[in-house]
Figure 1 (tube, rainbow, N blue to C red):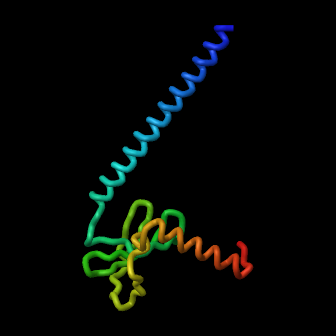
Figure 2 (figure 1 turned 90 degrees about the vertical axis):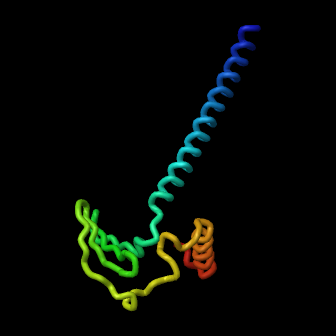
Figure 3 (figure 1 turned 45 degrees about the vertical axis):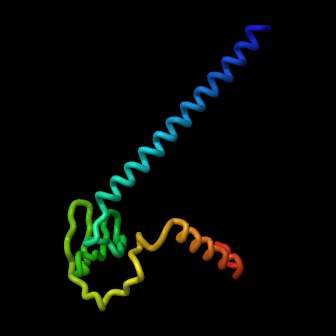
Length: 127
């Protein structure tokens, strides 16, 4: 009888220990991910080069509009090469307020998506 009770207690202690170790590993992973993201952000933050738009043509083939300084360029990006197609005058572009990536926080984007879905449900268009 005593062995059965101590066996259960050992099982609970072992379970709690494994759970605490798992939480510790999760916290370490979270911290390292945040640190890595901050490090990459600080190294990749450039004010002179910005990808404004990307269109996928085929598998591993894209056309991008890039702002470099004050010039706008169209480039073809393939698996192994990047080729400049042409320079685009600024007045020929339909620029929005910001780039596609930097158009707000995740919360703003999520709210816009939720608003779209809400409007579709009101109209009876449930996709």
